[in-house]
Amino acid sequence: MKIAISGSTGFIGGALREAFVSSGIEVVPLLRADFKRGENYLVQLLTGVDGIINLAGAPIVKRWTQAYKQEIMESRIKVTRQLVGALKAMSTDDRPEMFLSASAIGIYANSGTHDEEVFEYGHDFLGEVATRWEGAASEVEALGVRLVIMRMGLVLGKDGGMFGRLLPIFRMGLGGTVASGKQGFSFIHLDDVVGAVQFLLAKKELKGVFNFTAPYPVNNETFTRKLARKLGRPSFMAVPAFALKLVFSEGATALSHGPTVLPRKLSEAGYKFQFPDIDSALDDLIKP
Image 1 (cartoon, rainbow, N blue to C red):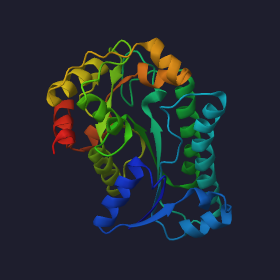
Image 2: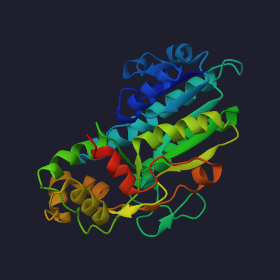
Image 3: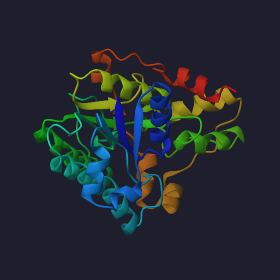
């Protein structure tokens, strides 16, 4: 199998690339420079590829200026549209048969519990980003390409992402809840992201939206308390919402709000999570 990955140098893309190579899957990295060389060049790169995994996008947890909000949006939509444009330009015989495109659980409203069939959409900036991102990807369906939308939760891994930044703070005893602590913390271990992607690549009958979250989500307060306890450190340094606002501006909503999301379709399809709950995930992540 031969898979092209946009965002292959990122936190998730790097883990996928490593797992694919070790299992004998050939990886075609789609780099930022490749998208600047035009549609014909992308067509050349994608010819002979079995599938595309689209992970490109600027980081969410950062101070949001108007310019950076535009970058968050365009870094996702533009790359997705370029990939779709290349697929449209390819012959049916050369066109990859599957397109796995990232999205985010930020598409859901912050209140209530959501799965792929029972949900309420959010109407804030993150909801708009995810909606437009998915809309751009959906155009491949008209080409006969199998589309999988991966709505990512909070991805926890040892060497990057949010957890990689939090762990040193908690080890120093400076960790604490964010804002009220009652917001949903719908996480997934990085190994389960890799496992779920491999599962979906193999199960060719599966398509549509899949929530990439563990079956047993918690809230931010529970995550904080459990992480501090496992490290033998206090967790009283709460970060109030107004302080987040000062640092991240409107981007503070990415930290102070969070939906509770369940992976109904992955579970029903038969995927077995390696780390279904926060205790098993944290035990793996903090072990030497």
